[in-house]
Image (cartoon, rainbow, N blue to C red; front, side):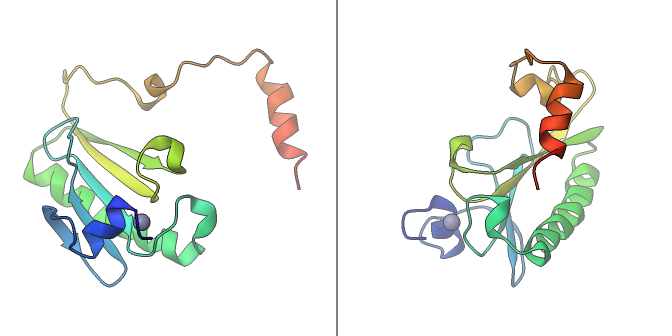
Length: 135
Ligand SMILES: [Zn+2]
């Protein structure tokens, strides 16, 4: 996509610090890292949400995420990792991507649920039934 920052990184129009690259996927250092070793994993095919990708494409992205996650955790002796998938352009760059964020005990980071604080007004069973009823 012409105006997509991540597509420009794939095409080398914008420089990046690349960690891994194969035919289908690419991993580079986050420009504004939340932690040391914060990485971005993308599929080289442009798409802004999971609905635009074939299951095979998503599988390749997760395979790369797994491979690089092991490396970054080991390299930086991280206690854990937070993995977050940004889907849809409301979440920043309009190109589906996975954040790999190394975590350490006492790093003052929160759990992934701390990103949103929009407590439901209906009970969980009612919401679950609405979700189940969609074909
Ligand atoms: Zn793109």
